[in-house]
Length: 268
Image (cartoon, rainbow, N blue to C red; front, side, top):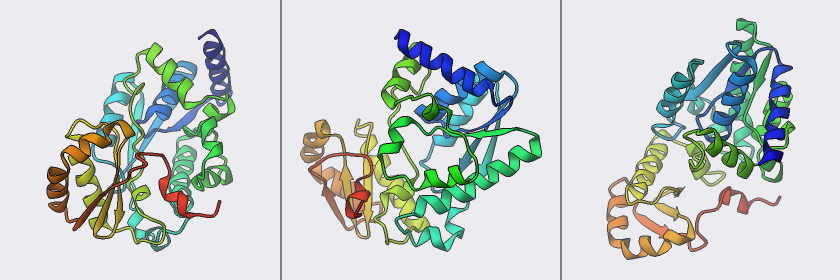
């Protein structure tokens, strides 16, 4: 743990060098940890900004607002109308680039208007090993990634978050709902609502981590391997309830949940 505290001290030094910072704050594990560190380093020279809209899982914005309020930091919520961008809704493999570019441009403009010197996001060292085209958008616009620069991994951030008593220490990842759509499948408002409703049903069964991948009439359910038996045992109930959200067919992915499963179709 001493090594982690040294790494955390390095993170604080990096952020202190910004003088003022606008933090891209989703309310997830990484951005919450970053916001805590930013406030510690720069006090009142920190603004947290959260994107909201139908692309994002229900309840995430409210959780982010509650935590920002608890920390006493200025918090701005911006509505994102990603479905207005036809390039994004066509869902190409670089979909995230187009979405992040628009979002980061708004963050940069806001920072300039407020006289804030740096925009920082929650990208971590682990992200370098995954297919994340959205990272390029941040790099192009000069967005800083202090967690990555300090060398923090997800496991380390969770460990320190527990020590600091952050409520997100064990929070499951819950990215943009567009990540549930196979590349080339159009992203629609109706599809997003179906995914959100179906995932809420699975979570209500006591399964904290779930992805419902949207394959048209078919919902492909991913849960951690330890919960596969539960889904099978309650398969009739799951099928009936997901049919009620608009899916004709329900399939259980026997490999279980894994991050970025849609990228398995790409030649990376």
